[in-house]
Image 1 (cartoon, rainbow, N blue to C red):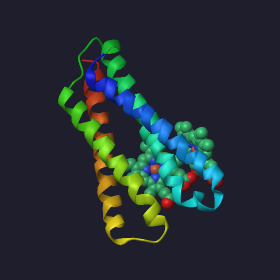
Image 2: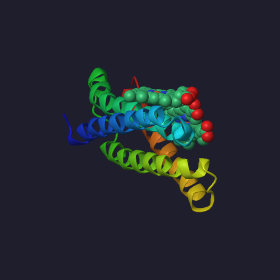
Image 3: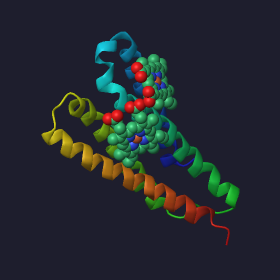
Length: 133
Ligand code: HEM
Ligand code: HEM
């Protein structure tokens, strides 16, 4: 398995543990849970679920198609942008919900754009990999 694929899987499992720990904290401290719902949701869905799908997808889909990944470089750029974007979004969200805009508003917007870029790169890379001719 390629090193970058292993890193996708590792980070996915890190996000599963962190996201679930936050969920557990939300059960223990229900009064504060509201600040952490978007963090919890996106660390679990964009972190654990999507990152697992990226890793497994990059490993399996080219083999199904009898091809190599269209761009190994995009695979790496996507990994770094996906992680940076998600961590930025997760870090900013509780501050935004608690009413602190300013710097955190800027971080959330930037991190969202970076996250979207990474999602888009995955779509392009996989579509180019699996195209039928
Ligand atoms: C130990 C594991 C987990 C615990 C204790 C936990 C706990 C919670 C809690 C307390 C809420 C807020 C419910 C509310 O008041 O509205 C929540 C929401 C949510 N959790 Fe988890 N969670 C866990 C794992 C996960 C995982 C692994 C995922 C996804 C893969 C996930 C996805 C979600 C989603 C999508 C919501 C938002 C639901 C909505 O829109 O209302 N959670 N979770
Ligand atoms: C660029 C990527 C994304 C951005 C910028 C984004 C942004 C947002 C925002 C602003 C909200 C509303 C949060 C609030 O209630 O204040 C939200 C909610 C939500 N998002 Fe995303 N999202 C992204 C990707 C995703 C993906 C890929 C998934 C699932 C795989 C997802 C699942 C959800 C869910 C389940 C909620 C509802 C959470 C709740 O119950 O409050 N998001 N998202």
